[in-house]
Image 1: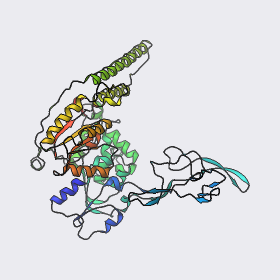
Image 2: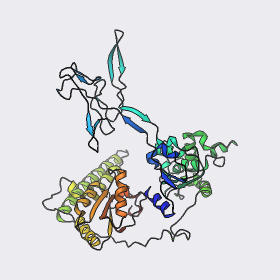
Image 3: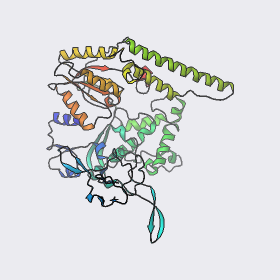
Image 4: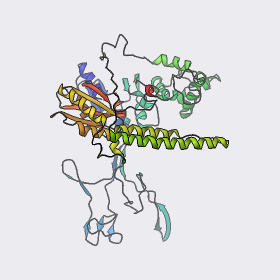
Amino acid sequence: MNDWVKELNLLGFEENKDFIILKKPGDLKKTAGVRFHLVSYEKWSTDRVTFRKKKHTTCPDCHSGAGFFNRHRQYCIACKRKAVPIMLDDDGKLLEARWSENDLPKHCPACGGEWKKGALSCDHECTVLHNGIEEVRKCTYSLIEKRIPSLSHYYHKGYDAVAVDEAHYIKNAESQRAKSILRIKARTRVLLTGTPAENEVTDLYWLLGWLTGFSSRYDDPIEGFGGNPKPFAGYGKVGLEHFRAHYGGGSKRRVLDVDSVEARVGHHEQLWQILDTVMVRKKKTDDDVKDYIAVPEPKHIRYHLELLPAERELYDLLVERFREWYEGEVTKKEAAEMRGEKYRINTIEICTWMDKLRKAASCPWTFPEYDVLKGSTTAKLQYIESKVKDFMRRGKKVLLFSGHKETIEQLKLALDEIIPGRFAEYIHGDVAMQYRWDVMKKFQDPDDPLSILIMSHRTGAESYTLTEAKGVFIVDLDFNGKVRPEVA
């Protein structure tokens, strides 16, 4: 969102005059002079839920239970007090506390039964007396007081044009964010993405469908063989399976995997013909864009650091355990083959061991076997502290990436004010989105003292603009071949 606001400002458009950021349904009525609506479809796809006020199951004052404390009236006859759950808001005002997805009751406030973990309503069976007859009923008490449809239900009936950034996120039509996009109507539709098909051919289905409106030129070829062409949209999930069967060879295959037999069976040439009618592929080297996005060629340097004694001791220990486990698996496999049976070594377990080894070289202090008395720091931390300090002295900002939350948080502690007055901050999956934007905005401000930004691999994979970074450190690499094929 920040990038779009920046680009519109560069084009001479003013916020709240020429364009607005939609935050509530009422913003759609602000049409005088407004030419652009900016929408976070992640936010607009989420239902707005109001949770019920908390109820006590026992008296919070004298702790009286059933027989003295009335759960429905929230009144205790023993101490003659009404229980009112309260909490403080950010301004220090008293509010009645409410439940949330992160704060569920241990017992149902209505029937007292044990609350099912993760549930928002109670399905506990209880016995009630009705007209003198005992009946077994489900409780059905819900923690949700009110649910309002997502903001995407309030879109305008139609736009002149719609551009959807990071469009690959709508590949699954069952997701709420995809639904928030697919219901938009517009005469001109544009999808922007660097990865239109991340995993398989069917990733393209809903993207192509929304772009073309499932028009007659986007027919279901299976029905077309019988001389009765129909659009894929007429079949929903069945149409999706037809699309996979015809263009994907019947199984999950990468779109560009043209050398495989299944890809040839999957009519990939026909698929490319469809894509050629709707896709404009831009490269950084294209004449019409290269001057606008010209970025200096980075200088790549790879350093191999010798582990310090305590690190080496831990790493060798894990390698030996991995060797023992793998040799045991090989022995089991050979024995199974001698019996004429099949035995597969668990690849997930192998990946788990690889992750342990990578973690041992990145944040060994998270392992109980690591002897902190022998090593108060690590080779990586020593090297990074030295290099980052050099950048700071020259007034330059740096960006660091790691795959481990523990490493990210440790780097923040180690690098914060490594030069007095120059600060470090981190962003990983647990950091709230609003806080992320604030941090990145400060990092992009050349005059702000926030000079070191540490991010997780996955968070950093989003399209963020962080041009103030004059040095980038990849603290640990991802061994996953799908993510980094060069290290596969």
